[in-house]
Length: 458
Image (cartoon, rainbow, N blue to C red; front, side):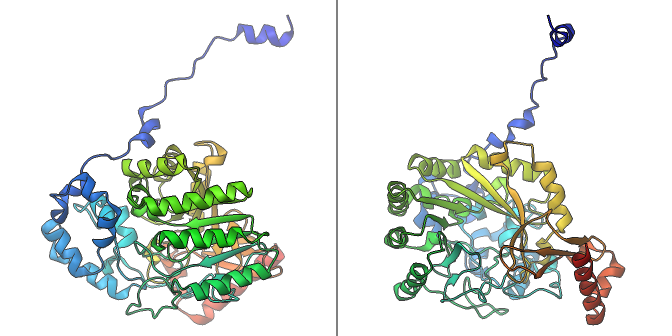
């Protein structure tokens, strides 16, 4: 017997303790008639409520409709607060009955779903002074209307400018949805003539191998458009990868359960891509574990049966998913319903949602806590899409980060070599004395210049 064998033989057996019950929380998907708590939906059967046509036709698009659906569930003060929020928001209102049914209307002020889709004026904060409407400079990287070509081998195809639900925090608030009191939008209609200009550009650029088909939201495209766009891109020899982007599985899962024509069209493109040895996948957007219910799993199971791979891109938001337990549960629940947790984005600097942004430090700490909770391939990469068009950077890859001033500096050698790109923590998370400095343009410029210098010399 070797020395090692003698040593291990003397060790007592120490079986691993049984898992705590909380380890299985990710499997606990809501499957009750939750919508019956809403006065307008109280008499609906599951079949009626879980029909994508009902969901689309009865989406709430005004405060008047919200009152008609909720009635006395909330008080007049809440309606007034939302009215004030809508007046200040860059996004128009559109929220599905599904989401309305999942919101806890006993405590709407702190409900993580309400926070994402219904603004309350009393909760909003002034925008950061360095914020811009198109903070990622998508329009500046647009060679033809509705196409952003920033990365060498990838392009973003904005097929249309509408969605089944409008998120308050939308990066494309400069274009998506109806005009609001705050923003007159740049519109990208679902027009075949415009699409052909996009296809012509892609064909002319043989370096483009990866196309994101987005908007808006491709759930609002007709089935024939899903098929046409997909097959048109598959026919371009150098296009190797395609990603359809839709939030439908998270905000209107009925779309992938009962709209069989739409799913058939997507499945057909996926199957054709497989024959051509090209990858076609679906990207979606779950932000909170409560958005994943039994009807979600039913729809996602159907996609898996058709060979449609689904990836998720979460946006990190204060009061929604910035707690360790919430982010860990979201990550494991996504994996449980066969959705690959791909990215967790630090909240972009967009107008009207300053109270939703977190510090960069929050993202870094969450990444540490989430990593190791489940398999690495089912763990999201925490990234920041830099202001000014530098592209996505890992949250730990900054050249400089001053937690006191809230300034982070990144470089992006593969996208824009030699340039610096910034992220700014929300002012209300800083020491009040430092926050006050941001109100002075000279002080603000000095802090940013100092950060740039420190990043250059580090």
